[in-house]
Length: 610
Image (cartoon, rainbow, N blue to C red; front, side, top):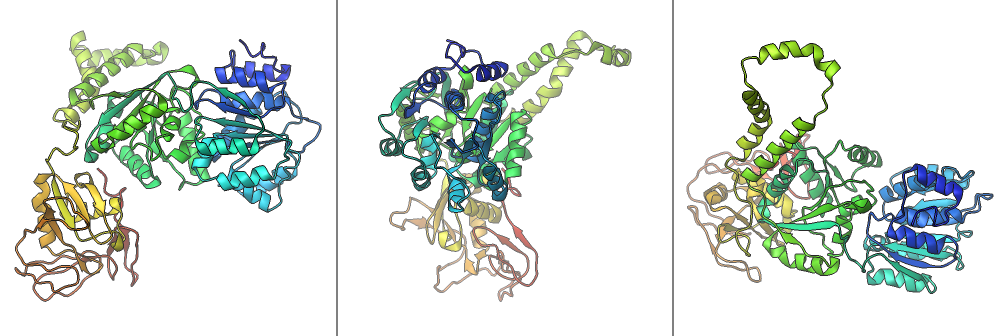
């Protein structure tokens, strides 16, 4: 089947032919054939990257009345990136259609410019739900002439909390319109939309509901929590030609991972909702041009990334909702190509792998994180391949060759090869020759090889998991990755470290560190707390009664406090404290306060990497 055999209008056929389209994908073949000559509602299920935009865009363009500027088609998408991408595709498809206007409206861009474009008239509006609701409230858009509403990535719009917005928008459109719903998965919320706003919809499904693409290989590596970032670097080094997306759960984690990758010399950048539109556009421009090898992104920000030839999707953390794995993995293996979707998991998360397998109806392969020898070998032969295939510019290099030959004349061919290869190989060999095994030893994840601590700091002190991790690493003078399995309660927390750092944490506790005027107490814990209580052993040379009671200290040595500025101490040494106060302060957690005009410094992940 070709696009010509589908009966496309000649002007549309000419445009798609110039774009290099030859044979429609299965979803395009089915939707174009059904929608081009029919007025019907439709529910179409197909994976990301299968060509859904052309599937609804080409028949939609063929139905427009170009003699009027009234808005006749409305396309809703969950993110501004997808909104922009759909708009660009429609403009490309309609290259030879005169008088057609496509307007994209989305948050993060000046609303007044979008209002001017809408007032000038536009047959097709592509919008994010939130911005469109703002325009409806301002009476800046007239939806009374809409004949077709397309809900693209409907499942994700509902996952992002746009249910009420969709109800408002669809309620503003004529009841006689046709609704075309496109989705990768079919949760109950999408079925509700179909029942409420569609009449006897035609159902088209490419593959089974929620099923992942068949040409994606699913792999997982099991590591301890503290080794997650090290495993990511090991994977990136094992695939020298990687062009991939790394998914994180939160904006903070996304920025942290990207910052650490950049610091460690990788071609990476972050994409998340805290970036301005211009920053997001700049990052995406770099990724599309392949200037970036790894894009670190949140689920929301990555929706609408339509980039071909993505080789790997790496789940730095599995998504909260197992169904979202389908969307993540769909970023690779687009347009019929193959790809690899990797999950970095801890033993506690192994059950999630089983859940995802049931949803995508495909099995994961458990693999070992590559060791140092594996990485060096892979990098070595990648270098050899690049040397073999490099383009030689004979005319340009000719004038330099006599001097090069003279410089290297005492070396044999074998010696030359060894030296050229060693230039790159040595870097990886030196780094990985004593590399540890990152694979989790057993199902418990820690194998009994950790020291578990109790600390009397928690959420009431403004800490979350990451900020407490950084704080503890600072006062014990260890790297943050050596503080793991942090469990933050309200007034206390638990954390684990390697046994070799036990003395450093106990020493920090003996130093009588304070946070916001409260003594920081750390004690070894023999077992996990039950209902807030657990057996704890206290080491360190002095009776300490904690949390509001009398506090006695023996030994009279130096007492440190963090953040409260200089305070006088009657027992001996200088005392520094963390938290609010005068003088220099470092902030861990939610509060960043200082007074007296003194310098304020945030102890953040970009200052303290792994």
